[in-house]
Image 1 (spheres, rainbow, N blue to C red):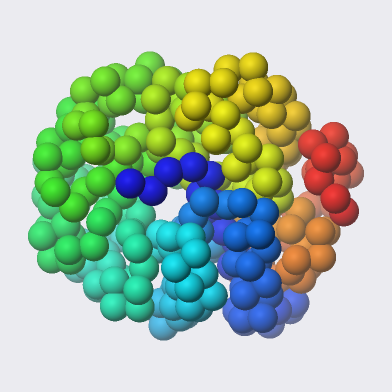
Image 2: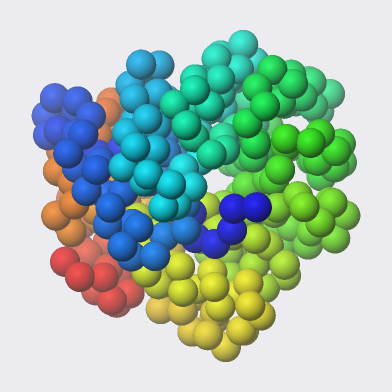
Length: 294
């Protein structure tokens, strides 16, 4: 089981052209390992998966795997609203050495619960790699309900879920009712510490792009049941949790990482745009309050 702080890592790009910045990608992976990040999530929503073509998508995963070199697991974002496309991406991720795949609920076409069950079942049966479900109805316009998750948890290589609703009652019910070897991960930095204190196994985090060491410490403390330290760290990081969503993710976090000198500004693909100037001070102030070096 993969546990701890898992960074939903940005995909660094070259200013203006927005080609993938391979040198910066290597730097980021090395930095996260040095900072204590427990796993790299490559080409998820925060990694701008919707605007990377298939070849780029797989190449980013391959580079992360090569740089990590087994020191931390690499989880590849391979979800799609087409089952055949998700199977293709998942098989390709397995082929370049990913340790697991993260599969978002099919977005936009709004399948039924049975449709989602059959979608994820088909991917799991087609590709043997461990697979983590990803429920984020605020972005997908469909909600993978707990009863459907329980059905999917019975499939051997579906090993967990990133639950990004922020609904702690739902998370607790999943923790209590899913098999013990099925991991419930937070996908919501604002409520992650509470979910981990309830028995969750990790946090797939946007904030970890900017404050990886403290996110790792928070996850360790919460999973060990250290309420005081977990809440102290959560309070410290709270300004970042809020500021990194003042515009659509990954707009603010990519700007923040660029401010830290780890990637370039003006390097985000349309239809996303650079962080609006009116929010620069707010994000920078949150970084200072949370102890992030600029």
